Amino acid sequence: MRHYELLVILKPTLTDEEKSSQVEFLKDLLGKNEALIEAIEDKGTRNLAYEIQKHKRGHYYVIYFKAPSSSIAEIERMIRFNEEIIKFMTVKYENKKEIAFWETLSNNVKKSNQKTEVKKEEKPQEEEKSQEEA
Image (tube, rainbow, N blue to C red; front, side, top):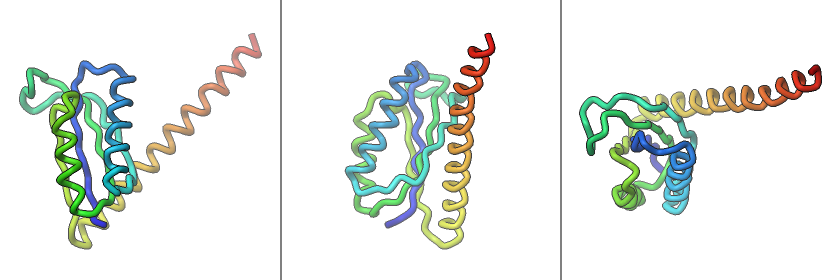
């Protein structure tokens, strides 16, 4: 199993539901190709360095995963068929130094995702308290 990072840029015109369905598509695709997803980072909508398919902005996602090297060609082939993805890039981490860096990146993403989940859980409780006081 090798360490990989997949950067995906989605069309900026997609709704939140369509973005989440694209992320699910990527999760399923990686799962079918024997990949183990370590972390998914939503980088948000950003300006592109140059116009791609008449889009000046794009919504970025970074997926950190481990997979056999033989499955990468199939993953990239299937991503090319998806019209909602305007650009993607797969990066392979090979030597010990790169793999250590990959580990820290994926761990940082996991920690930040856990913090945002905790904040989301706290908000409904605060709203309930304010409704009870009223």
